[in-house]
Amino acid sequence: MSGMEMRSTICATGCAGGNVAVDGSKFVLYKSERGPSVTDQRQRLTISGSEQLNPFAPEQKRLGAIINHWKISGIMTYGRGWPANATVSGDPNQDGNTSNDRLSKYGRNALLGPDYASTDLRMGRRVDRGGRIHLEFAGESFNVFNRDNKKYGIADCGFYNSAGRFVKYSQRAGGSHYPAYYQQPTSFMKAMSSFAPRQMQFSMRLSFLNRMKNLS
Amino acid sequence: MLDAQGASITNADIVAIRAETGIRNHSATDSAGRFVMDLLPPGVYSARAEAEGMSPQISPPITVDVGAIAQLTFKLRVAGPKETITVSDEPRLGQTDSSAVSALVDQRAIKDLPLNGRRFTDLLLLAPGVTQDRRGPTSGSNGDPSYGGMRGYNTSFLVDGGDNNNGFFAQATGRYRAPFQFSNEVVQEFRVQSSGYGAESGQAGGAVVNVVTKVGDQ
Image (cartoon, rainbow over all chains, first blue to last red; front, side, top):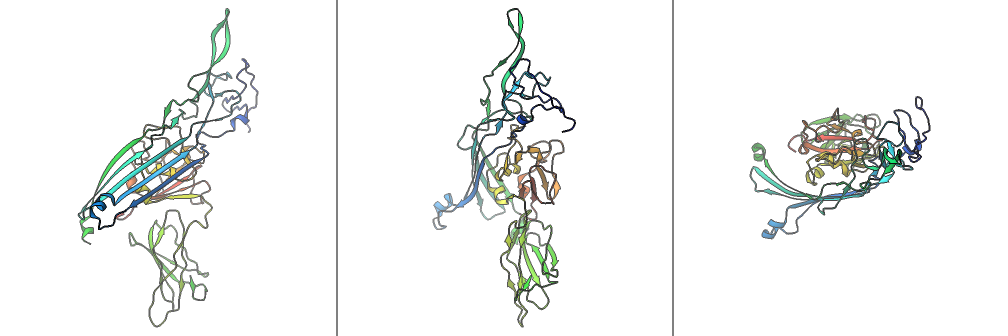
């Protein structure tokens, strides 16, 4: 820790609680800086599989031709939320950095975002008429149950969601400026966007086989 | 390599032939009867063992996955008046010697599973310990795959042994940033190795993704 300077911050307004002051290489409260990363998704389950069901015997030509040879595959994903940060804009600790302050008593990424679930399905079939050309077509649907996977915006540095706004010198009490106050935004810990809704994708693939290979 | 009594056979000749390409790899047993073939390209192999005075033995088809180990034991019999070729036991597959936690995404998964955007790198999310780094998502991506809570750019990608990381954004080259393209059609399989990977891998705080492309007429 050489080169780092320990110092205490006394908040002039008495309300920022001396939570975070990361000022270049000067750290104030190590304890509150120790927290999960925004990619720390604690539980996550994925189940995937693919199967080609041929329920009809080759003798049942009509039903077999329609229903057999379809390949069905899917991925089911469920995960708990990602951590979110109780950021406060407006630089309450007055260290000149407007993007490193959090609500009092909240450590780094102390809050938990909404969980995430998605089911993707694919059905595909290959049509092979014995010639040089093979045709494969498939339909895919992502988030097939159209689950509303809420998303908090998080910028590259991990700060985006504002838990509050620290406003200086804009209020007057009597004739003089009121030093500062907190403004609570309406959007905090409310999803402002979401992951993708149900999406569908259809594909077709033509394969041209090598004539030499076909002969062999 | 053992004989019928369970004693090791030295200086026996082993050849492994890859079914897709016909390429042959040779090895010989040491004084303890052991042999090793390093750095085999992933594929389906058939091995044959020969030693002086012994009947040759062939192995059943061995599927060698990327980053995996297949253990094969030959038990040769003394050559009789008639030439006989025996078939060895099935190879033991699995990472019995490795401390790394890894997951294989094989050709069947790449070919069959639903994949939005045709980026094979999104199939990393099937491996344990991987999640999406929600920073820097675009309309075409929900963020880079992140391993063990690390940032997405701490994952290193190797394609056929070569470095495949974007020098500026540190994601896989061809994941979605222009001008690179990397079609999932060319990928045969890949292995996701967590931190704690073997000494042959490196330069990643998160996962090492070892990608092998197709050869021959696959």
